[in-house]
Image 1 (cartoon, one colour):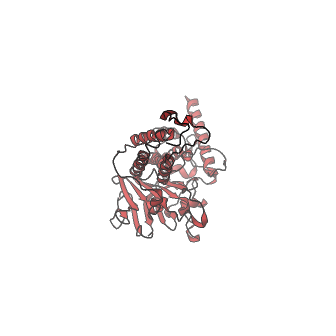
Image 2 (cartoon, rainbow, N blue to C red):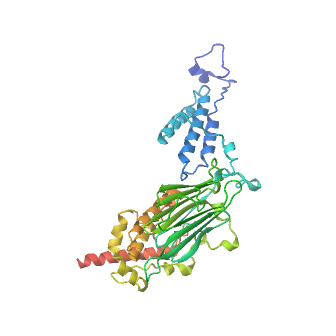
Image 3 (cartoon, rainbow, N blue to C red):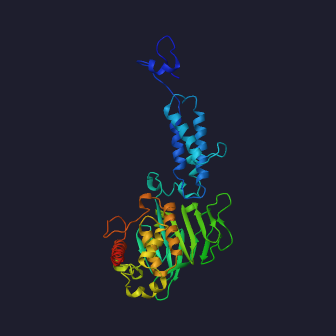
Length: 419
């Protein structure tokens, strides 16, 4: 264990304490290296990816093997014993088997050209230190409501075909159609996605979904891009004809597409540096720059909702058909969503506009997608407020929902006063 002082060899448990003067304790415990390797291997993993548990378990087994190799030299090291206990707890939590494949070292993983998280060339240009990528989220659902990559939230018309994303790696186009005659409200009934060819990872792949036709394959009939070993791009069917996921490892992108009622929703998580990889002719992207002001339903800070039984002009026809009052719409939305954030109020607005309860499910699922894909938990919920707090949120939208809250209070006050 080391050089001991004095003529007599003390008991092992007091060896360290007995050293004085020039005595040195030399150890070769490698627990710090084991831990560093584990952190490096797992730091690139994305919990939203389908194979997260598989890869995490492989990393835990590699960590366990490393600690076992150091068991003798580390037997008196508290950090070592803490690591061993921690590995056991994590393996139990993730239902990992003790026997199975293990991860290679991080330096080997980074050589995978079809794993975006392992790309060293994208984050080591010009001598910069390697850093973890920053991910952004965009979602479109309902009537339709848009959450941009900047966490701005807007309600728009955008009838016809519009680009959500259009950059060097990915194009996503949505087509929106009117929901109710006489109303400006639209919803998405078609989504076209193009994964552009990328080195040796995948050829160009096109996917298209329409109402009542949500396939679990690309238009060429395949379910993946690249060779069968890398699976750099693949589609996973979660609920037949109703919910699919797309995982593009080569560009670090995950996409959820759902059909709820007669309309489609889409949620996307993508690395910031790839989101911004577009030219001047590609600036019309709803996820990047939001809806044009002429397409905003919440323009001038007001959503057209009923006030004490009276309707704003444009909504008269749609509300007459909806069959919902502000009170009943609020109650219906509260059944699925207990937090009164923008998703809750979007649900209320959609019910008042269309009377279609599938929009309630769409708002609820949209929030679930945020929780699954948005990288920052503190930004999952956006709450209505008057004014702009200057933290990347759309002031017009919050003013409009601030008005909606006041309307709700006034409506309830009038209701109970009449009782």
